Image (cartoon, rainbow, N blue to C red):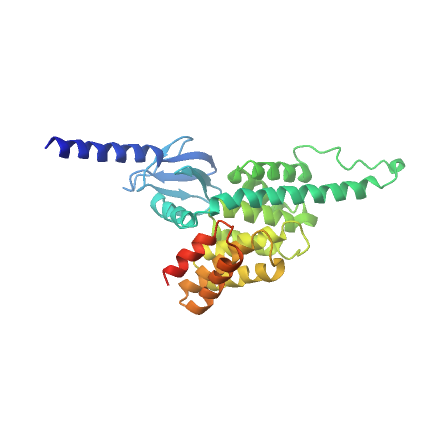
Length: 303
């Protein structure tokens, strides 16, 4: 009897402990939004640090946005959206099935940062070649209303992981056409910010627009994010097209094994076993030292 009580206590303690670490908290809010805490139809205005339940329902208006922390990850609820915390956790669970995905994201972000700096250096060199007597001040005169300054502010928010705030900056820039000449670059950062906050379907049009500039420093990442977004919304044929384009255009690049794995997984879901095996075998034979090797082996065993 004592043993049974002791085991029950351990189970209860574990559940309580897990609940403490798997909570949902409101991080950031703007515009009109409402939350039904218990799912019983009683709506209230959210506040920062508000704790939500799995059964809570979130609704945003035409100008409303909410950024939540769910089980330690940031999730943005975009405008004109109604969703439940349970469904958002299911999306997170889908992403977490790719155990290596969390480690891949900072690598991709660092790549964007490094290539962006290289581009800025080149532009600075070109601009610096202008005769001083022309009096051109390329960096001066920027203020809070300057589109260039707002864009740099948005990129800094993106770098810091403040995706909800970054999205507002980039959306305003596109709507105001304040940086019409850099619309593709703004579209990339907007789409990428949406991708990071699991607004996968909404991110695709912006990423697609940014990919019109194939020689841009962000093109490779836009192609990756777009392909993953299609996979996460279960558009497996679209995902196959995207990842196949990546492999075709970037060959044996850093992210090639991940693209090959996703091709295999997409074909597997569609029931095309031989195509799936082909990609899993390419990983097994050529990428034994990568963190997706065992994923490919596991996928093969399940077939």
